[in-house]
Length: 215
Image (cartoon, rainbow, N blue to C red; front, side, top):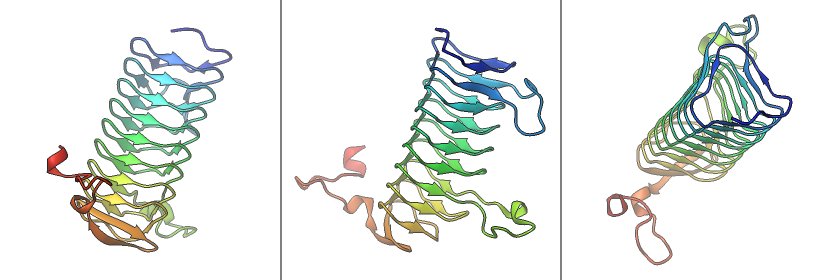
């Protein structure tokens, strides 16, 4: 691994084979009240962490991870293999991300969010987790959204606390999702409503965009 310019790597950080670090990265930053090296941080093989990223301690990140420039990743997250997270995306703590997940640039994922395998999150997506913001007990009731396997969330979507996007569902760009979306549904609007199923979506040539014929 080439030595990056002015990187700060805290104790108890483990890199797999053939990882690449950009300049000015911070890896293993302890959370507030924690000591340097108290939480182990692990990266699998062939990971790429680009310049100006900050990754806190206690993260477990799988093989073939790629992070964009200026990624901010808080502590104690579980991230699978073949995950890509875009430039200047912010991911809070205790988030679970499965395998083969793509999160585009400038997204925000709060604590206790769950992203299952093969899902896709577009740019500028905002997930929320506080149904009672500014309440004295707000942190007792945090509920992160759940994006199920293979679901796709379009650009500039907002998901409210605790909503579930069902398997292989599609949420259209700009939607505000206030209620859970069923599996295979296409939802759009403000508030989002089910419009059709993904099996109804066709390419311009008339072939099916999603569904068993293309699996």
